[in-house]
Length: 187
Length: 187
DNA sequence: AAAAAACTATACCGATGTGTACATATCAAA
DNA sequence: TTTGATATGTACACATCGGTATAGTTTTTT
Image (cartoon, rainbow over all chains, first blue to last red; front, top):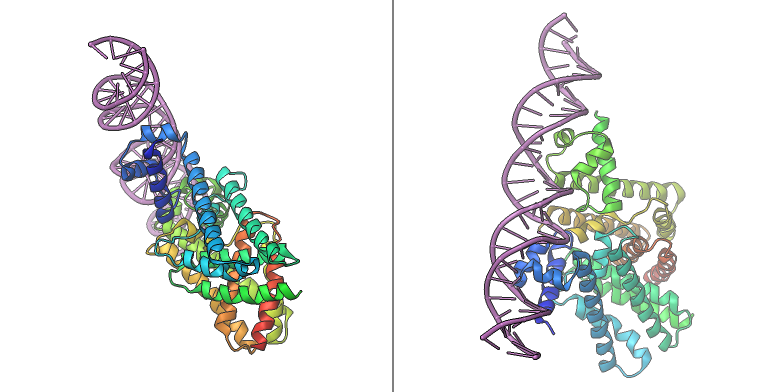
C-alpha cells in the first residue's frame, strides 16, 4: 500500500487539469509530488499509463459522487432526473472545477486510434448510459434520445464553464433540461 | 500577396486539427508545407501568433459559411432558426470535420490568462451573440436564454462528433432544438 | 544588368521532453 | 548481523521543442 503512488496520481491529476496534459512534463509532476522519476516509472510504466489512470480515477470519482448524491437526496426514480442538474450544477460551480477531464483529454489527443482518446470516448459513452438508466427508471420511453440530449447539455455546460468561469451556462442548461424532460414524458 | 503564407496557415490548421496544437511542432509544419522555419518566422513572429491566426481564420470561415447558407436558403427571419441545425449538421458531418477549433484550443490551453484561451473564449461568445441575433430577428423575447441553450446543444454535438465519428449526436440535438425553440416562442 | 527582395539550406542555441543506468540508502526477514 | 529486496538520488542519454544566425540561391523590380 504505497501512499507515494497515490500522491503522484493526485498531483498529476491536478497539474493536468490546470496546465493541460501535454504541457505537463513528468519532471514537473515528480517535483511537485516530492519524489523522483525513478519512483514514478516504478509505479507507471509510461506517461501514457499515468494519464490513463488519472482519467479513470477522475471519472470514477465523478460517477460515484453523482450517484451517491442522487441516492441520498431522492426517493422516487422520477425525482432523480429532476434533481440531476442541481447536482451537476454543484459539481460545476465548485471552486476547483477546471473542466471535465475526458472532454479535455479527447481534445488534446484527437487521433481516434490513440489510447487516451479511446478511453475518453468510452467514458463519455458510459456517462450517456448512466443517464439512459435514469431515464429508463423514470419510465421514459425513448430513453436513448433523452439521455443523449441531456448529455449534450451537460457536456456543453461543462465546456462553457471551463472556457469562462461564472458563465452561468448551467442555469440555462437546467431550464432546457426541464423542457426536454417534460417533452420526453409526454411523447 | 504571398501564397506561401497561406500555405503555412492552411497546413498548420490541418495539423492542429488532426494531431492537436501542442503536439504539432513548427518543424513538422514547415516540412509538410514544403518550406523552412526561416520563412515561417518571417510571416509569424512566434508559434503562438500562428495559432491565433489559424483560429481566427477558422472561425471566420465558419461564420461566413453559415451566414451565407442561411441567407441563401431562407427568406423569413423565423425560418433561419428552423434551418439552422440543418446547416450545422451539414458542417459537422462533412468528412473533414475534426471538431470545433476553438473548443479544442480552450482545452489545450486551460489557463484563462493565456492568449489562445482568451481568443477561444471570445469566439464562443461571438457565436452565442450570432445565435442571439437570429433569435431576436425571429421575434423571440428571451433571446439570450435560447441562444445559450442552442449553443450548448451545438457545441455539445460538435464535441460528441469529434469524440466519436458518426455518433449521430447532431440528430438528437436537432430534435431538442425544435422543442426548445417552440417553447421559447410560446413563453 | 544591377539591385533588392523573397526564399532555401544548414547548423546551431538553450530548454525541455520521456525514459534509464547506476549507485546508495532503507528496512524487513533470516 | 548478514542478506536481499525495495525505495531513492544523481546523473545522463537521446530526441525534440521554439527560435535564430549565417550564408547561399532564386525571383522580381528597376
